[in-house]
Image (cartoon, rainbow, N blue to C red; front, side, top):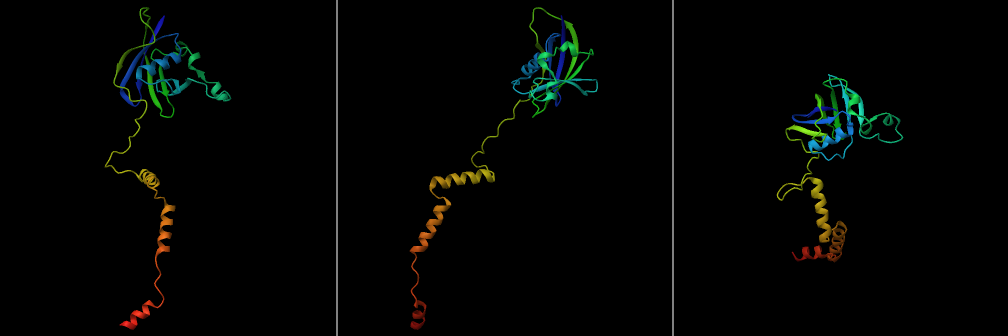
Amino acid sequence: MAIYRFKIKFEDYDDVFRVIELRATHTFKDFHEAIQKAIGFDNSKPASFYMSDDYWRKGTEITLTDGSSTDAAAKSKKLMHKSKIADYIEDPHQKIIYISDFDVQWSFVIELIKITDEDVTVSYPRCISSGGTAPKQYKPVAALPANGEEDDDDDREFREKIFQHEEGLDEDDDDEDAMTEGENEEEPEAGADESAEEIE
């Protein structure tokens, strides 16, 4: 049986690549899972392959899922698990575009680099070569500011509100205290100023 050898590269990271071999009868879903495993992604995001010409123009889309069952356009898409790789290879150096996680748009360029015979002693699909360290699938979450670093206005206001609540210094309490202090102050007796002038 024919074995297809593909070179997969991150579009934005030229030095990162993987070389994967698959049987001609494998599906694009098998290919998708092999790529995700080879680059260390968790295979939890939607993805699509796009058959391409020599100028990397997108052609037929082969997608992981068909989306909503009521979407007529989605129903017409080719599905990975129903699409054998051999049925879409039209060129000895067939080019394919692969996009994973459409929110982030991880984009890859794929090229068929060799067609060889199957080795019955190995298991396919398999990654036979790799170069470079793949980027992290998810961006790290920013840690809270360390002591001594300036917080932004929202964080500072939020923390002040918590502190005031814990200390019983809510605004309503402040108003009540101010009113109480005003009531306890003694008003000066009438004529006090006049008496002082007479003494002088």
